[in-house]
Image (cartoon, rainbow, N blue to C red; front, side, top):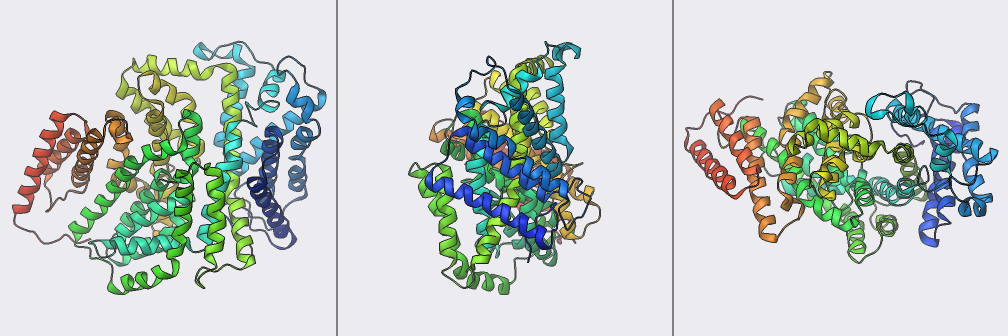
Length: 631
């Protein structure tokens, strides 16, 4: 049976065998380099780019609407041509690695092969991800070469094509820069680990753990969705993939137990998007943030703990108040009993996560830790019949992982070229100055503009690509206003995640809506946006209160965490119109005010907000109980 990945060709016959063989060769090569060492940087990265560009031409048709069961001859030709840059790097490595960039002129072969590498990477990205990133690359390249014809702040001297190719192709500052290095190491290994864990039924492990934690609570099916999606999303690194992996079970279960289909879809979409913020893996994003900020990976993970908790807790409270409002019961005893039985069958699949965390704490590189996570998953999966994988099953998992990585890798390759072009033009610094002049240096106005740019640019793009593009321009502006680099980049990254649930291109919400059978996908997106109101505010909270990113003393961290948690409860109650009892308009306004006071981060406002919250809660508890609303 052929492995299928959403958006890729559904190949049959010899064409499917060829794609499978290439994907397996790519994965085995990268696993080999972990165990036995990588070649020189330019050789390794150029071969990684060649392999994934070739895979993109084999896996994706010229247009996404075209359903193909075979690979046309010209795509085979493009896949072979994709290896030309790597061949040049390998056979002429000594000259390329010792030449003086921008001083020694390029040879004719350098020119031709450099253009081939850049154009093929751009076209492969267009096929895998659509036009957005490719058009952005075209704009920045056009700006670099035609700078004198641009108006205002964009006006600048032209940069010649030779210098552009030299910088982007012949050095480690462009296509073969650090982002490609991350793609070939950390990102690839952790995405592969997630694919193998999923193929070994790791999703059932997360689902059983979630059912045992929350299944007996009011509205248990919705709370299980929150826990399971958060845990699995940390591994999968894709909101849409997470929706399909966990939502195919949680959404029908939520609907059966009393949640409205649209609400169930919206909750699954929000929860599935959260996974990329959940430590320790964060869907591979922690490595990108660490690379941009120069902060150690483990420190990025630590800083993300409380924001990730607040995100998931906000979704959890929305589910809780919905369940209380409509008297939605816990999950049935039969489902809980089944989760207990299955927990024993799948509990050993939690050990690879422990292995990864242990190795990271011991100081091993994330690259190495992920590799041993993969090895331990394959070994441990053989212990019980429920998770045992045949040789074919392991190869299927490798192929799936290799193919899932394609769009992520292509987005990083094009982002690397965009960054190198912006470095040549200096446009990033000018954009920062322009942004600050527009906002007059006002912190919260700047934050609001950055938030909007993250959401707009992130629509339809993988989170990693959306984060990278906005981080180039927006994060420096926030840093100039006195925000720490890690806080600024987490702010940008958080909203790149949220773009997946924000209309008009709320890809995670649309995926969840299709599972729920809701034909009005835009309405699902707007419902997700409404239910995620507290989620949208979390980044502003940790900017106002750096202690939530562990930037402060432990008493400050504890106080900030408690008040932020209560503030989230108040905001969720205001949005849902329920806290201990149905809330009228005045109570909802007071709850919203209470949330603002608690989330502002000051001692005085915390005390007032806490007192107001206690008073509202006591009043609601003492009110005569009304009959539950009908869902």
